[in-house]
Amino acid sequence: MITLLDYGAGNVRSIINAIEKLGKEVFTAKTPEDILNAKKLVFPGVGNFKTMMDVLHREGFAEALLAYLEENRPFLGICLGLQALFENSEEAPGVSGLGFIKGSVKRFSVNLSVPHIGWNGICVKKPSPIFNGLSGEEKFYFVHSYHVVPEDEDVILTTTDYGYCFVSAICRGNVTATQFHPEKSGKAGLAVFQNFIAPAHAPAAPIRKTGKTRLAKRIVACLDVRANDQGDLVVTKGDQYDVREKGEVRNLGRPVELARRYYEEGADEIAFLNITGFRDFPLEDMPMLEVLRRTSEHVFVPLTIGGGIRDYTDRTGRTWSALSVASEYFRSGADKISIGSDAVAIVEKFLETKKKSGNSAIEKISSVYGNQAVVISIDPRRVYVDREDDVPYVVIETEIPDDKGRKYCWFQCTVKGGREGRPVDAVTLARVCEDLGAGEILLNSIDRDGTNSGFDMELINAVAGAVTIPVIASSGAGCEEHFLEVFTKTEAEAGLAAGIFHRREVPIIAVKQYLAGRVEIR
Ligand code: 1PR
Image (cartoon, rainbow, N blue to C red):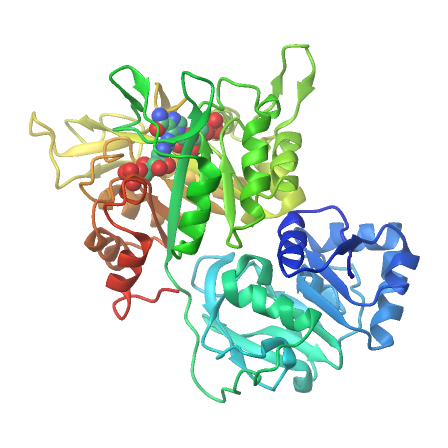
């Protein structure tokens, strides 16, 4: 029996699923005594350092946890569960951590996107049974803006490079804690859990004295999901957002099965977009929650879910906040939520009032679950103009003139699945959303969607150049070369595709094989 300390933030379902997949039962600690009685304790953390420490103290968990650690009993901390062991964090000045390890937690100070999101390597600094059977060359999934800085070098188990070298796991006696998420790190992550439960009879990963690790470019498989005319939830795919063919919604497969297939084929992340979420009541859309729950039983890479995340009033007159909708998605297995239409409304309001309301879905969800959990999905369309100063938007000079020969365009944001254009451009939208607390941009293009003609490089460069958070390039992938192009000619950190994967035209593995040796991949 493994005891899990769940203080209520984020996605612990994946951890439970990972441990259960390995044949162990998980018991969730509800009282400090449960911690003291644990045989093996897993402490995952997501979100904000202060929120976590407040809850640990309020529930009496902090004292019990420290007592458990001081007795050198088996412990696996994950992400914030590593940071909690330290004395303090720059994320919450004045708030004390558990102080079990001397040292502090610092924000990344790099000329790179922060949060550090994605698959990166580890340099193992001392032998540990937690890495039994691994080569030490595997990549693990990270998502964090802060990293630990221990005073005592002896506790360092692994380091990772992101701008500079930082400590990505520590170990002191039976206490091990990782900055990366084993529950989201595919087979290598499952091996870490297995070793925590019962170390494999295999050598520990070799120690690496030198060498740097590199963050991989991510390949994301996207599943646009909606009910078809018979009421079944299906994966569909549009051409420039039109998902109907001969009047019928295209049916390209079942969401859970398809997600599992993409995980097995090596997808680094899976995104589900509930494309009619804007007009449905998402919390009544139980099949979608069920899809997430069932997917997270077998898929151990990050899951993003989008569609319908906004404040709304249901048929009975009850009001739901965007935060409560997001919370339900996180509880059902999502690691990140993505906001589309509502982000446009939020930005329009911000531009009108010139101030942050503090109440928007972006601000609220990021303050509870962390910036990294909030993705903004943008659905822009090119609008051509004669001159650069014709419109009050960010205009670019384009190498792809329209049929009238016009060489300037802006990228108009749309809502409701591209049905309605709004007076805001994609570059401004991305900038404002970053400022409000978004952690990542999923950048679609209605012009390129489903065309197989390649990503819109000009759009991606315009947006990626305006923000410091990671950008996922989406729409138009037709072959392996398109991924190479987007990773070498833009700052995009991930490439997303749908049609070519669903139709089995280009398998994920073919994309990976083509990129290997050309760009860093997992
Ligand atoms: O507005 O917050 O309810 O969210 C709705 C979400 O659904 C948005 O993220 C929006 O992008 C998405 N969406 C709405 N309508 C459609 C549609 O297709 N009719 N799908 C839609 C967007 C775009 C991509 C697609 C890529 C790659 N799909 O995610 O997967 O373009 O496709 P490709 O590789 O085949 O070119 P809200």
